[in-house]
Amino acid sequence: MRNIPNLITSLNLTSGFIALVFASKGDLVTASWLILAAMIFDFFDGFAARSLKAYSDIGKELDSLADLVSFGVAPAFIIYKMLVPALNISPESGNALTIKHILAFVTVIMPVCAALRLAVFNLDTTQKTSFRGLPTPANAIAVITVVIAAHITGLPFLAWFTGSATALITYTVILSLLMVTRLPLLSLKFANLRFAGNEPRYILIGLVLASFIFFGFASTPFVIPAYLLVSLGSTLFIRS
Image 1 (spheres, helix red, strand yellow):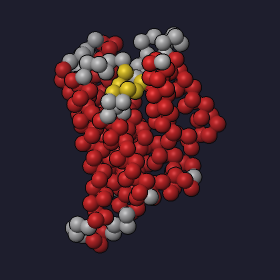
Image 2 (cartoon, rainbow, N blue to C red):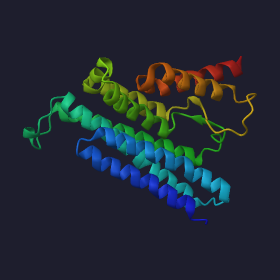
Image 3 (tube, rainbow, N blue to C red):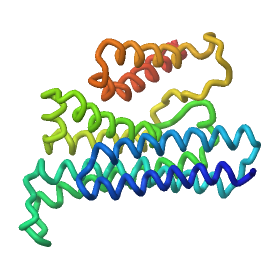
């Protein structure tokens, strides 16, 4: 029973690896759904550990390693696969290293910052009820929602975004730096279901649900911006 959380964590890692395989073949939509599956496993491994009281140092380290692959490496590789055609890098260029190739390799900043974020999180005892910096699953959500929404909705703005080298590079850098900042952000873990004390969490859930009802999948890329705004708003409110 004590190994069940680690088994679920391994499924997180498995999903992240298979997402990389699909992304390497150019199927970025399936890769994105697999990253979403990894997030579900990431949620349930913690739930299982708490329910079974099966905490372990190995489980903690395994969870970070799985998160690095699923929420750091895989999203970065998806952006890389979008960036290559956006930069007009052709297969005929072979192994020649050009400015365009160097720009595409900017995506490596994402897994590096994710690794730093996870290492700090494992040692930082102040992040039990709130976060400092963008959590790695939120980083992955920011990437895959753009891919999935662009595929489902076909909106011109999203088509432009996923095909713009400038937009993709800027997005990569912003998300990566957010992971290693000390910006105070909301944890979505509920100690209880009462509204009092959980106001920002319920506001965020309400905003996400309302936007999805009215705008469908077109609203999903705005989940993380909404999360950032509600987090910062709640921090300013508490300080005031």
